[in-house]
Amino acid sequence: MASFGKFRWISRRITTQSSAPLRICVVGSGPAGFYTAEKILKAHEKVEVDIIDRLPTPFGLVRSGVAPDHPETKIVTNQFSRVAQNERCSFFGNVCLGSSITLPELREMYNAVVLAYGAESDRSLGIPGEELAGIYAAREFVWWYNGHPDCRNLDPDLKSTDTAVIFGQGNVALDVARILLRPTAELARTDIASHALAALEESSIRKVYLVGRRGPVQAACTAKELREVLGIKDLHIHIQPADLVTTPADEIEMKNNRIRRRVYELLSKAVTPVHAPHPGRRELHFVFFRKPDKFLESNDRSGHLGGVQLEKTILKGDDELVKQVAVGTGVYEEISCGLSLKSIGYKSIAIDGLPFDSYKGIVPNIGGRVFADASKDHMQYETGLYVCGWLKRGPTGIVATNLYCAEETLACISDDIGKGVLTSNSPKPGRDGLLQLLDSRNTRVVTFDAWEKIDAEEKRRGNLKNKPREKLTTWEELLKV
Ligand code: NAP
Image (cartoon, rainbow, N blue to C red; front, side, top):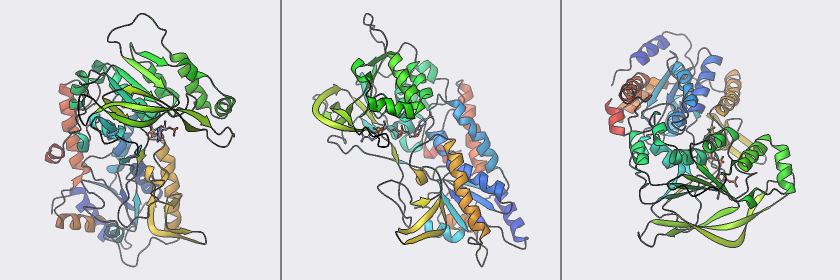
């Protein structure tokens, strides 16, 4: 078996104790996983926490989701590193729940398991043409520019078109629009993956359309992120004046929601005055009240995207309590484009042995306790199984939202510890058992020490290019280091 310095020391210490500590495994090392681990360690002096992740690298969405030009959001990894360095905590990367180890096996080895593996899939539009080349989920594009090893080879063609259409107007849509439009000299100073920077430097995309099925009052983004994209140097902003006209229902929505009002006000003031055409200038078009109807194949390139057909919408539902929904009008229009990014929400993936609500894309739970059976007169929980983060509440919220989410899950765990629900007759094997099983399956575990080597190497390579880090972006490179 490979050497696990800290782990051996801890396991010797445990065996000398009279009462075995409770052992908890957290699956997923993104913000939800790390906040949960931190809170468990703080609240329970004798509990040991192991965090596993399918990637060799920790920090989940902070590494692979947060945009490279948002370094301030990544500072939280310092806090997460301190958690991983706690002597009662271990990180084991390159361990995939479902293939390296099953959920029943994990539950057998630990007193409790907290699932915080996020949302690694995407909602689909379900419209004709979605399989054409040139159409990606925004998640894939984000993973590509953030150097996630699964999207290293995505290789989106940014050279054969001058137009990209993005569906959705949430913060992810704004992130991908910004990366497509921002001067690459500015991106070069970030930790953007080098393959993505090279492709963006050669990109011919000049026009980006951000398409929303509802109006400017309902745009799902937040003001700070909107201000950032509107502030891109030399960017021409287009919005149809008619789309900015509000209805009484819109006014009610804005009265009840300050963020919606702020976003609307920013959009209203954003339109660039029309001057003489400025060749080569980059353009951002906010398109409202249009829903995707079909993707159109290119006339010149078989199997490749050539445009999108949109259906005009109107909003229905003006009750204060019911959100206004977009309804098609039967009027259609087209935009020619060679690239389209679907930014309409992430989706969690179910695993064997886990109750899963496929409609909502979450694990059914109350406050983080997983339901075994939620029928009307029979509420039964899975003993020792909890969720946190996007898998618990769906793909919404910022990094810090997971702090509150973790507190709620911790409350359930603490309650169960207090009631003795998690105590077993014989001590659970925890990390000893986990590592033995993984070793028998030839799984190469990446410890936090090993991650620190990757981290140092990435920073060293970044330093040579005046970047905070140059990410290693293939499984081979990561495991080699
Ligand atoms: P989101 O905020 O839920 O936005 C999804 C967008 O997709 C909405 O505009 C929605 O429109 C649209 N949409 C959904 N289904 C659609 C369909 N069938 N056809 C057309 N449009 C459709 O999701 P997100 O942008 O993926 O962001 C996820 C979470 O991460 C959010 O909470 C976000 O704030 C957060 N985030 C934060 C930051 C940051 O703080 N910098 C950065 C990235 C992400 P409707 O409103 O009409 O449904």
